[in-house]
Image (cartoon, rainbow, N blue to C red; front, side):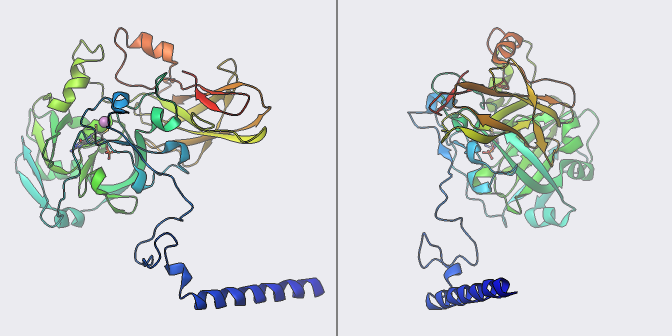
Length: 405
Ligand SMILES: Nc1nc2c(c(=O)[nH]1)N[C@H]1C(S)=C(S)[C@@H](COP(=O)(O)O)O[C@H]1N2
Ligand SMILES: [Mo]
């Protein structure tokens, strides 16, 4: 009994001291240690010890990395993401030169028009009165691809992907309400920003699982992500997820809008086909490019896998620690959800020597993530629209992790 009582007494004394401290400094917990005086009770911020941040793109230095000369783009710090949800504050941004428009949700409208029986106009309030769904989906930019040379870190090579819980109304509900006319096969998502970035997608997919989303991770979508409304088309290239959505126009055939031109005409796509679904892809996010191991010993290799093909579900992830000679099945961390990031992990003891780490995933359609060589061959001669090749990372004997592509 005696040691226990002593323990309890010490606990009481310490908590009394804490209470005294808190009283003395006037509700310590309510203050932001970074910005003294700012009241953190209504809307919180992270600890001042946390530094994870987006990486801005589009200036002269890194423009060539992602190719958009007007870029208002930013990479998500994927190498530091914990769990499958990307915090909204560090969701990647791909906005083609547009700062987010300043939209008052009270004045925003969504128009359903084109080949429909009854054109409809919804206010945000009306949309929110409809039954909603919440789904965890990734969005990945077409430009998210590893490359040798200039891109060194895991964020540089893979930061144009993020995963959120999106909440909104299925597009099918709105289209059924409007009544799609015979002869309609495609849908154009129309956006409200100055430089219109409309995209078209097949009606079938829109009816299947596309969302008009107003919620992201439990709150309103962030301005950079399309506030107050965006399209979410699970598994499709990022550019189809139209932000600042103001119209859904039902049409007879695909229209090549300005921003679709790239997919349609380049990338060896001589048949003029659309490639909207993204193939199986995975990447080790620790240990990964730009990071450093602090010493030999036990580590857990972690990473993400995802696919836009088939039913969008990852079935298997293998990890190689010897440059692809042998492969080990990694553990898939639950939940494993369609069109979401899937976490994988594998225990690893680093003996201090050189090692080449890489992951390869298989989706539930049986498609296996290709090596860079296989990828190049498939999309020859000009390289494919989807950069889903295997990413090798080289651990040097002083613990640096380098891009080994
Ligand atoms: N209205 C509008 N929607 C848009 C874009 C845009 O510039 N304007 N960019 C597209 C591209 S290229 C991508 S990859 C995704 C990125 O979404 P995010 O910025 O929320 O990450 O949005 C798409 N939707
Ligand atoms: Mo994009």
